[in-house]
Length: 228
Image: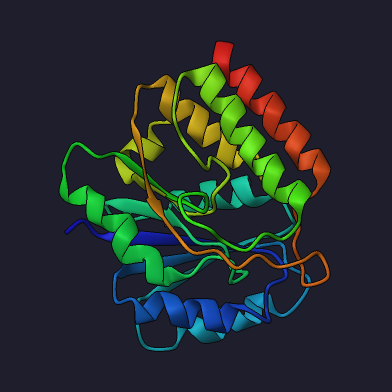
């Protein structure tokens, strides 16, 4: 089975980091965890230092001096990856590492290059109607532009072969990384497989960071990359 590298971008997630790292390690599927502290102003860095000393999958800590965005954190983590597959794991507990087995299983077929965990292949809780329908619109819009049939392009669970991901000209700094990587994969003819996952959304009061402007940037990213 291919070795799985988990990139863990985080920004002010000191409260949830111990639990998410515990869950990742409990799967016994992570070859390594590459944690990227994206300029946090809370105790995230200290929490990650402590977690790097705990038993389980080795945790490498990388840091940005200032907050640069999720996409920038993923690119930083990608440069340090040593595994065959890359999985992006948000630190906020919305996505459960118990899904790793299902996400990695399709890669037993050597022709599979990318697998997404879809929140829309079976019922899941919704944070707000606007957030849910915004995500569904982005998937529909991407499918119209690129001739694809992806049900959840904004999912946080994306697993891609390391060599494939590194070959993409990734440049997005923010949450639009999701649309950028999807567009670039589709432009290169990569078929994106999907598996159903569970999802427990958090509210803005609990720390959810995506805003309406991120949706506008996502749409612009899909349009720009379609004809670039």
